[in-house]
Length: 238
Image (cartoon, rainbow, N blue to C red; front, side, top):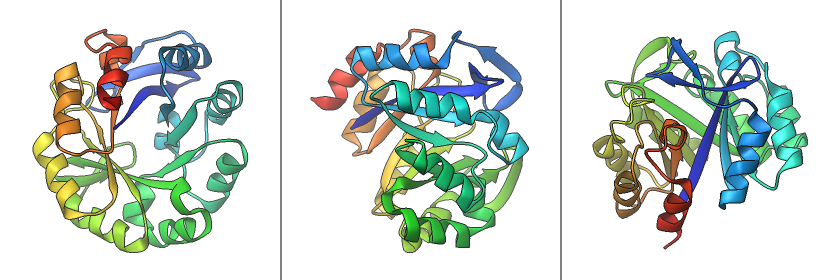
């Protein structure tokens, strides 16, 4: 299983939110590059990054932060937030980003996802974020009537290989991941499923691994020190 330490960006700075609420923004580190380097020194191979400004503004905002991490570390950068066009994807692909996450457009413009997969293959992942089991979009401000598993099946048919699933009610809470929904999703599609939201302790990592998840995104747990990144990496690799 892959451990993805997370760096979410607002105004160029690493932050964390509580349940996706921008009013709860808390800066958790001074510098994204130095934070990423610390993850690399601990043994991480990947870093999960999100352009939170981009999510709200529906365009690339903090792109220089992400491309700098890609260029100045050996980490593979998985990136989401504000990626709405093929031009956005091309920009990030040409600037060293290893995985590009399409979120809101998966629901609103599945043709774009299909075109992206046809052009970029497994560089493309889809982020499915849900409230009460139903997909939410636009930085989690809009809720749809599409059940998360149904959206995942649609993405699987398009050819998407990797899905990042977030239960918004768990995000930033350190309350543990939604194992029930993650297992339901993992059993419903053949895609690689990464768990996002609520991961707090090494027991959560063990549970996700035992349930056959592809990856786990760890954000607040690392910054609040409820999870030791080195221990998580070791557990995931055993």
